[in-house]
Image (cartoon, rainbow, N blue to C red; front, side, top):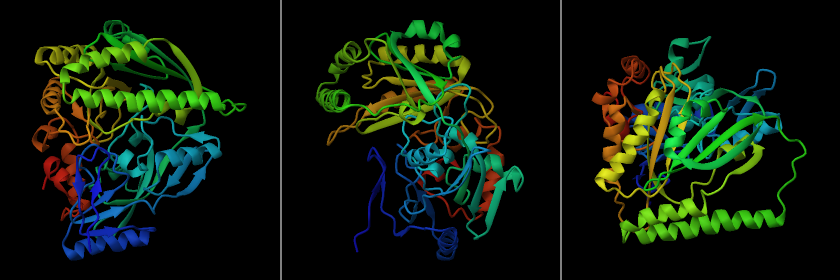
Length: 443
C-alpha cells in the first residue's frame, strides 16, 4: 500500500506517516495514544497543515483532526464555548455568530484548527487583546498513559499555563473551552503613509482597538490598517453582482495572478523586486479607504499563493528601532524582499511558552514568495533577520519556521524549566516527539 504524504501549506515540509489515525471521540483518542505507547513509537497531531514549519510532521504515527471538529456546548450568558480540537476557527466563528457571539480577536488566516492555533500561541493584533491561547479557559487532555485530565482554574490549575501553549507535546486535547464575547463589527480605515511617520506617531496609533501595518521594502511606504469595534449592523445587505465582480477582478486577477506572474519573473531576475514593490505601492497602496463588516471578514484576508514566513515577537518598546534596523539590513546586504513586512501588536500574558509572556509585544513578520518549480533565495535574508531579532530579545512564533534551538530558547522564557517538568510528568517517554521537538525541547 502506498503511504500518504502530508505537506504543510507552503509544501516546504512533508511527512509520510506509517500509521494514520482519525479519531471521532475521546475514547478513540485514548485507544490511539495508549497504542502508541505499547508499540514504542511516536505520534504528532496534524491539523490543517497551515504552519510554515514542521511542528506537526511525523513519519511514524499521525493523528488527523478532520473528524474531531464539533462544537460541543455554548453558554451565551458567560460567552464561553466548548469545542473539539479539530474545529476550524472560521467554522467556529460562523457557529458563534448564530448565537450573537464572536472570538475577541483573530489572526490574518482563520483556517487553522483551534488546537493548533492555541497550541502555538497564534495571535491577531491590538494591544487590548492577547494571543488566542489567552482565550483558553479549560481543556481535557489525554496523556500517553491514557489518563484523561480536566485542566482549568479549578482543576489541575498548576497545568493550565503550560497547556494553553502546548506545542503538541503534553498530550492530545479532546475538548477546549474558549472565552468568546458578544458579536461585533469592525469599522476599518486603511491608508498609505511613510515608515518614519508611522514610527514617530506609533503610541497614539496603538490606542485603536486593533492596529497593524505593512512596511514595503525598497520603498519608504507603509500601509496602515486600524479598526474600531462597533455594534453589528443587523440591516447589512449582501454585495451586489457588480461589487462581487469588482472584488473578484481586484483580488483574484490583479492581486493574485498578475502579482504572482511578476514575482515569478523576478526569480529569474531578482533585481526586478524593487520595481515590483514600487509598482504595488502606486497601484494598490495609494489611497485611503474605509469599510465596515463582521469581525471575521475584517480580521482575515487571502494570503494568495505559497509563502515562507518567519515571525518574531519583540518587546514593544523596541518596535521603531527594529524596523529601522531591518530596513538598513535589506539595504546594506542588498537583499531582495518580495513581500511587505507585517507588523502587529499583542498584549502580554503569563502563559509559560507564549512569545508574549511577561511583556506587551510587537510581532514583525518577514515573508518570501515560494515559486513553483524554482528554488527560493531568501535563506540568507531570513538568517540575518533572526540574528537581528535576537538582539532585541526576540522570541520566534512557534507556528512559523525558525532555526533557534533549545539552548538559546531556554534563556528567553522564565518558565522554560517549568514547562519541561510538566512535559516529563505527562509524557515521560516523550511519545509526542518529532524533529521539531527534538530541536527545541529536551530529549
